[in-house]
Each structure stands twice: as C-alpha cells, then as structure tokens.
Length: 448
Image: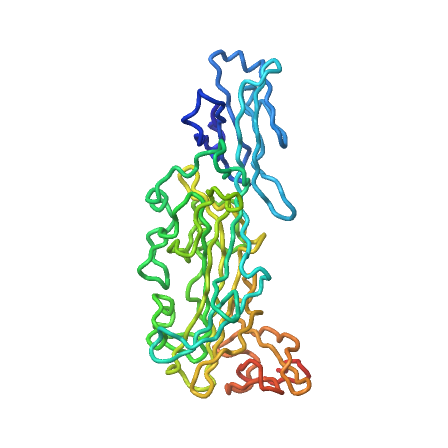
C-alpha cells in the first residue's frame, strides 16, 4: 500500500511493531495534518493488476471514495478534515480496509493530526501580578511578575492536547513518529540559528527536542513617555535596542514573525513564519514528549512561563510612568515530511495571551501602577499605541473600580486627552487608582 503521488501531504510511517511483522498482524500507518489541501489518497498495488476490479474499499468513520484518481479502482481517498469534539477541531483515526469477495485482505490506519492549546495553571484562569523588590538590577528596584498564585511565585502553565490520543498509546501498534534524533530535528527548525531577543546566548533551535513541539511567539511594546535610552534601562539582551537612538514614547521591541497575526493565520502553514518560535530557545520549562507509559500524559505537551519586568529605583524621577506590553502566541508544530507544520490555531482557543506591566515612580521608588490580574488576558488586545485608564469612584471612603476608561491613541508622544503634562493620580477614598497624565474622575467616570 502506498501514498499516491497526487497527495503531497501524507506520509507512510513504519509501525512500532515493525520488527514483529510476519509473526503477528502489523498495520500500515499513514500520517497527515488536518486541514491541508485535498484528501488523503491511497494506492493499492497487486502483482495482478486485474485484482483492482474485484476489491472494495471500506473505512470505519466518514466516507471513502474509489476510484480516487481517474478510473483506477486501486486508488481511494478519505478526508483529512478531522472532526470536532464540543467546540474544538480535533484529529482523527480512520481505519481503512480492503476486501475481496467479502474477505478482508488488508487493513491500515490514516492518522489525521491536530492539537489544541489551553491554559492549565491556574485552573481558574486568573493569575496574579506580584510586586517585589527586584534582584538582578543595578542597586535596588521594583519587579512586576506574572504568577499563578498571589502569595508565592508559581509559573503559569499551558497544555497542548494532540489528537487522536490513541496515536500515543504505549505498547500499541502505532506509527513510529519519534524516529529522529534531536540534532536532526533542530537542524530543520525555522530560523533556528537566530538568537533570542533577551537570552542572547540561546538560539531558537534549542527549543526543540521532539517531532511534536509546543512553542511560543512573543511581541512586545513599551510605553516610554520619559524617553529613557537603552543605556539607561537594565540590560536585557536586545530587548531595549529600539531605544538606542531617538527613543520614542511608544515603540515595538519585538514583533511576531511576519504573517503570524492570528487574523491572517492559515491552517497548517508549511515552513512559514507561523512555525517560528521566536520566544522558545530552551526546553527547560517544558514537558516536551507526548509519549508516556502514563495514559493521562499520552498526547500531552506542557510548558510554563512567568513574564516579568524590573526597573531600578535610580532610574527616572517622581511621576514618571513606564509600561511593557507582552503578548504571546502558544502553538504546536509538527515535523512531518521534512518540514515543520503548524497543527494548532490559537485564534480558536487559549493559545493567545497577554500581560501588560505598568510602573510609576513615587517617592523615589518605582511602584506597581495598578497592574492587576485584569491586565492578564487570553487574547492579544490592547497592543497598539493605546493606553487603558481605569476610573475609581469613591464609595464609603474606599477606592472602588468604576467604569473602564476609554482607550486614547497616542499622538506626538502624549495622549490626545492630555490638558497638561503633569501626572496625577485619579480616584479618591484610599487614594488607589492609576496614575496617568491629566484627567479627572467624576462619579466613577473618567473625564476628558
């Protein structure tokens, strides 16, 4: 049994039971990626070509069509569209059989591969923003860091569920996909020799060790109204290079690889920018193999992250503000037919996320400028040159969050609603509220 030459996206893979072929029934396995163009086309070969007139193709799910190519009844096709579970697209296991005069003469499996990414830690989906004294910056400073727990540091975690799960069943007759060395896989990683924007000693291919890889892309924008230069900011690889000359009040430190905007994603992109993990230089934070003897770990990949930013107290003057908007895209890529294929779509699930970290200089020290768990989201909202302001209303002497303020686009380095460039804190009661340039709060609504 072969993959027909008209099907460039399916590969015949040897069985994990291959050594036992001839001693027991061993299946043929054909692997493809959900959503690629066309159908899976199989072609049977017989010594007597006349046998093709007497065979019948069957499958256990969906439909199978023969002839698939011209009038050749030795060809048949099945869909690679996969199936759905709830509101998720998932992969599929399709058993294909050939019978002749009612007797089965061949059986094989078509594996249509897909994956879905989800936030697993914290379970309630709402992490904390921890504000601590910074370690690792010149002198004393302030660090804001995303954490799954408020009282202690715990990285947030993402899980990728690869389907069909039966493709990873320990001890079963399954395709032997994990047949490559780590070196062979890393050699083919898109942009693998490029260095990480922060971890300058790490290259992107270092994030791969399996044919299935849960990876990450990052984009970042910094709101720098005080116009700090790269030399003034704490060392962080090339992250601040955008401020090396003529610093701007709003600048993109790093962007997603071109074409990786979720609005423009094409399912199963081949060797494209959509498979570049520009925030994935190591495997230290991951469970990188979906193969396990433990059933609940089969077909599962995990990775963690804890984005943070620190500023030294020696930087800036009272009233200065600083904000770093970090946005991410978790995705799964699969090494197949010598290429890396995207096998997840973050626009459909929790693959997109963000955390925006804001600072303000008060009494000679950098403090958290009302960065709260609401500044974490499973989306990529608020990246452009906009700043979110929240208005607090006074109720019984305490600051209570009111209506979310409008978004103001930055023009000429200051918000359009600024009447004067003197930062002030809005809100009343306990004095809580976010410091921003200008504006006032009336009955919980931000005024222009």
